[in-house]
Image 1 (tube, rainbow, N blue to C red):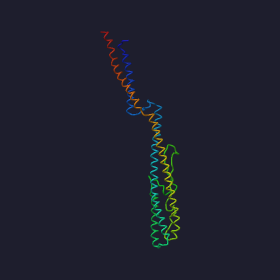
Image 2 (cartoon, helix red, strand yellow; image 1 turned 60 degrees about the vertical axis):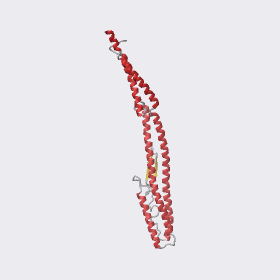
Image 3 (cartoon, helix red, strand yellow; image 1 turned 120 degrees about the horizontal axis):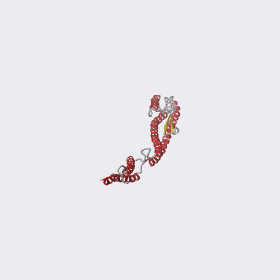
Image 4 (cartoon, rainbow, N blue to C red; image 1 turned 30 degrees about the horizontal axis):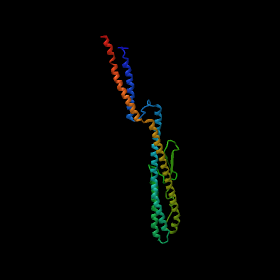
Amino acid sequence: MLAIKNNLMSINAVRHLGLSYDRLARSVERLSSGLRINGARDDAAGLAVRELMRADITVLQQSYGNALDGISMLQTFEGALGTIDDMLIHLKQLTEQAASGAYSSEQRTIMNNEFDEMLAEIDRIVGSVEFNGNKLLDSATATISIQFGKNATDKIDVTGSDLTSSALGLSTASIRSAASAQSSLLAVRTAITTKDAARAAFGYKMNRLESTIAVIRNQAENLMAAESRISDVDVATEMTIMTRNQVLTQAGVAMLSQANTMPELALSLLR
């Protein structure tokens, strides 16, 4: 029907043009952001799943950082024990030397003075070495938990060791005489064994944390891949859709222009 008051063809063209333009705008948004889901209207269920995955990925990434920090902490304490190891070996050397009857009492006094200084340095090291304010070398009850998951059980507890001279049984050791030096040999050997056990425990924990890191990285990678499949845009497919919407939008504009000329036909009849 040829009418003047209502241009139905123009109204229909405007409606279709609006739909094509909205679809084109959505394709541009997806391609510019790289995401298939930019809002809840794109995929409400997918958005909910994606946000939960992103939260889990964030936890895994922080867990990875926590485990690395834990290894750094253990390396700090284990490095200090390496120095104490050298000192205890030197103490054993001094004790063995003083146990020989070939030395005078004056010479043993000099050896004993060095022995005492080494013990004082061991006490200083175990009391001063720390990581972010945490100490693990001067207390057998100190415990640090390294968290690497969202559950309370996802952690590794690191227990400290008391490696002070008194705890090692060396506070009363003396090498002033051959007899006292001979009795101190067993004490120094026991102290080395105690230190070795503490150092080995730190090594076990580092190995365990390295295994944990490998698992965390694998979990994070797989979860990121799953999140990508839900959230990321398929560029090839979306470009095809955008091209189609561009053609439809251009056609809609052309048809709207033609529809707006139709009332002129009615006017020509009134002349």
